[in-house]
Length: 490
Image (cartoon, rainbow, N blue to C red; front, side, top):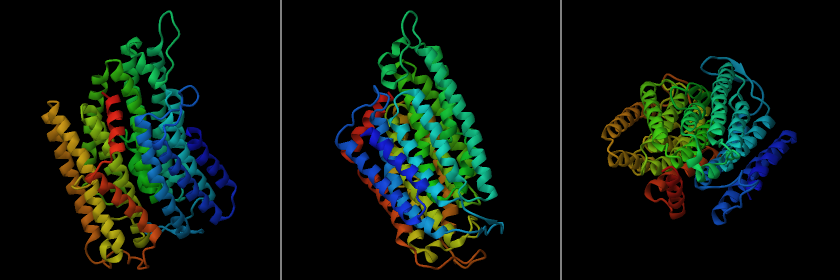
């Protein structure tokens, strides 16, 4: 089953490159996404057997993140079909700068989207650290053409920044693999294989100094890909300039892949008795990321860039949760699910707003609720979901993290955490409420008044329902997986 999860999107991506007709290629995208979702659901019913001596296996962390990835990709694939129909071919004009630009070939976009799914799947099932590194590097290579789909100078610049900064980060993570190999070397015996479960089982034999050094490099390297400050500078550009459906996957699924890389090495550190070292590092980076987002979100002039900085805040929340320990790890993993759903919803809605108003300027967009009733209503719902308001899922996860901070004797962390959340809430509310209210025919461009198509509102509505359900009820199987994953983090 694990091989099927990998081969299905890979084969579909290869086929998308050679298919010339748009219709069959788009149908292939949705069919592959549905097949991947079905296989992921089957993996919950029956545990798939490990492959290649345990190099590929589904543990609790991988199962959780794979499910999030697959659950996001299917609605996004449906949205992508309508998006590609709407985009069409030929030159397009950028409203803000008045420049003409053209899109990349649709075959390239569809194929890279499917290969992106395959590479993210490989991240979530990889148990060997070297293979995990290859998989995370593959997500960069598969997603870079998606970021540059609009051949505009801003999107090309964002792509190069994405490649350059993430490549530096991934190089540091490779050095972390080397350091981990040194930590696993044993005098008078063969070195331990760099497989998560093998290292956890023989953690007492690891060299603690080299293990701590590896943890620092993994955190800096994969933290760059995750968007932790001060390594986040590629993220606002890439997420704001990519097509909205790509932004939804970058923020909702790709950031989780880098998080998986950090969690893997933290699992080893916990087993080796160095868990506190890793937790303190995560706590520091997490609070810094939340602080940077709190500075840049208020007064943001680009609503897609606003959502990108919100992602910087939320990866900080994930790091803080794991860094606190105790129930904080459970809260962080639950928050990863809620954030992915809410942020994917908001980026798809931002695509609807951009299509209607032809600008990303927050000052030029007014009256979204009147011009686009379904999109505008969900836009407001998304605001309260992503800022952790009750009764949505992020509220429950953030409350869990705050309680964990208090239970572990860290009232200062709890106060700082809540203060930064409050600043971000005010900053996002000012922007989102201004765009939702008012007269659609203000000083900016008049919105396109055509009827909202079902493909444009159904996927974000599904995400909205899911993130609401997560705040009211955590299903038993999901809770069990969250508990097992949190237990592996100490």
